[in-house]
Structure formats: structure tokens, C-alpha cells
Image 1 (cartoon, rainbow, N blue to C red):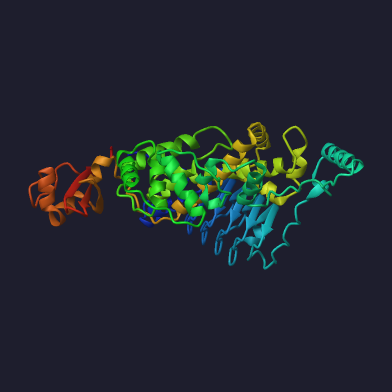
Image 2: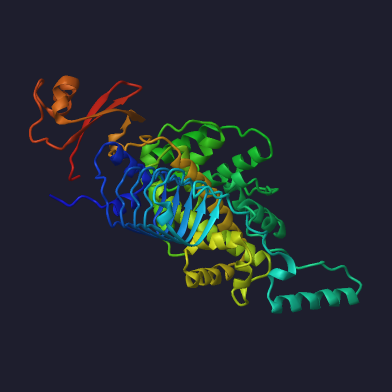
Length: 488
């Protein structure tokens, strides 16, 4: 028999899959000595497990349920634990080292007197011997105090020259504001451009400045951007029947412009007739962007927006951690460049002056300062508009992917592959139920005979382990029964 996947592998595949297997009793409860490295996980249910001696190296854990879990002699090093529930957990002999604890609850945890904590930053943590939460971190250093000697001398020299010529000068250097959200950084950068570029219409969630004129064109991209511009001007976009038909066809065929087709339909308020037939091209486009080896590589928000609009969740949420890492790096680099820093001077001084910038650095590369420096070099060499576009695209895409992650499970059955299994009379077929072989005679005997040639009242031969998928067209009532074998 093949070896069952380890807990490390299962959690890497996503918390939703882990929780489903856990709920179905398909995973063991003892995982002594498990080792997790740079694990990003949210909402995973680890309550009541045996994780004795487990190691957690530079892990980013959010809303993890550790209630009544045996974490004795566990070792947490680096990383961050946010909103995690340790109530009733056994922490005897455990070690927390160089760790950020944010809003975690240790009420009723056992072995706290044996818990070792070294260089742990705690914020609003409750239940650790009744101690109060530590005061918030000091505000980040801004102005001249956040800059290097070379920058200060250069800026003061410019100010002195301006004063001699009778011109007004700035009282201090531009502030370093990594704590500002990406939308604020984007808006300030956009104002520095002569006029808003057309691509700002791809990020309507950031409420950008709108271009005054649109170039003529009949492509779906141009028509989508025109619809966005109309909406941002507080007008209602009107649906063009010929364009709607063109967009529906792009979704049906899984064309390259399926993403903008879905987004156009959303803007004009038309429900897409097709969803699954566009899944392959959209997921491939997202995967190709995520696989690019670039710490600030862009992710097209029209692709992620289309996946959200079409509710195509399977194999999509797993890309959210990469998108968040890229956004953190891009947000940090944008704030540094806005304040006058670049890779050639001592930008580390500014980085370490703010808890916000340190947090962004950890989210981007963990403790790898070399990777952070190399990413800054690449990003700073880009033209200003290209840098701004990356920031905006990543901010919008992260929002879209986070919304996708909140969609209920089963919006897109993962075992359905290929548009030919889902379309009927130019419409999608609806998933009805999944059946095991022994359930066929009692539930779909006639359909099994018509579709698979199985005599009524009999169980399909040699079908141990097979899954039978029952589909129905909501329009014409046609039904299908598809066999999904384990090896497929």
C-alpha cells in the first residue's frame, strides 16, 4: 500500500483540504516529531493532535486551532503566530524563539511554567500567567532621523541652495511610510505621473484617477476598460448585446481573452452562461505568473478577478501566499523609493527604524536579507510607471484571491475535468451527487443502464474505488453519469 501523506505535506496542500480530511477521520492524530519549514497556513484545525517534539521553522500561522493539542517539547523558531488558539494545549518543555505572537490566546494552557521564551515579540496576547499585553511599538522614525548621513547632507545642501536663491524649500525629507496601505502608496505615485495610464482601469478596487480619454477599439480589453471608466465616473455601464455574445463565446471556448470577457460581463451586470469551460486557461495564466522567479512579479488582477467572478476556486487559493509575499516586498520597496532610499545607500537603517517595515520584510523573504536586497535591486531598476503597475496589480490580485479563499467549498467540484463533461446544449450541467458503485442500483439504475450499459439492479463490475458523478442540465433536463477512477 502507498504510504499515507505526512501532515507536513497535507498542510502544504492547503488548510481546506486538511480540514476536510480531518473531519472525515482520514488522518491520524499522532504526529510526533513533525517538522514544518516556512509553512504558511490559515484556519487549519490542529486541535487535539499529538505534536510532541514538533519543529516550526519560520512559519506564518494565522487562526490555527491548537486547542488541547500536545505541543510538549515543540520548538517554534522565527515567523509569526497570529490569532492562534492555544487554550488547553500542553506546552510543557516547548520553546518559542525569535517569534511574533499577535492576539494569541493561551488561557488554560498546561505547562506554561516550563515554556521557554526567548526574544518573543508579543502583542495583545492573553493567558500567559495573566500578564498584560505589552505596549504598542513606538511610531516609526520619520523625516531626517530615518535617513543616512549621505542623504541628509545632500538634502540639506539642496535646501541651503534654495534658501540662498529665495525659493521655498521643504522643512524635512520625505517621510518613510511603510505603514501606509498599498492604495495610498499607489495614489501618491499616480499623482506624480503626467496623466493616468490606461492600465489603472484594471484596478478599480483602488479607486484610481481616471484617464480623460480612451483610444478607440473593439477588443474586449478596451470595452472592459471603458465600462470600468464609466462606473468610476458614477455612471451605469450599458450592456451591448453583440459584445455580450462575444464575451460569452470567449468563455465558452476558453479563449485567451476569457479573463477580460468575464470582467466585462461583471461590469455590465450580465451573468456568465459558462464558467468551467474557461477554468483551464485562467488557471494556467495565473500559474504562469506565479511561477516567474521575481520577488515583485506582477499578477494580472483581471485573471484573479475572473476566477472570483466565475467562482473557480480549485487550485487557486494555493497561490495566495505567493501573492501576499510579492505584495509585501513591493509595498516595502515602494515606500523606500518614495522616501528617497535605494539599494546603493544604507537603506537597512530605514528598514530597521520601523516595525511595519520589518514586518513587511519578514512577510516577503522571512529572515533572508540577501534575497530582500536582490529583489530591491531588480525593482528599483524598473521605470517608475512599471513599479507602480506592479504595486497596483498585486494589491488588487491579493484582494481577489482573499475573496476566492472565502468562497464555500464545492463551488467547483475538483473531479470535473474538461468542458465536454460540463456543457449541455450550450449551457453548463449542474452537479447533482457523487455515488459509489454499490449505490448505483438504488439511486440511478436507469441512468446507469442508459449511460454505461449497466443492467438495472446490478452493481457495475470491477468498480471498487470508482466514483460516479451525476450531472443534470437545468434547461433541458438531460442527465449524465461519469465514472472517475482513482488512477485518473
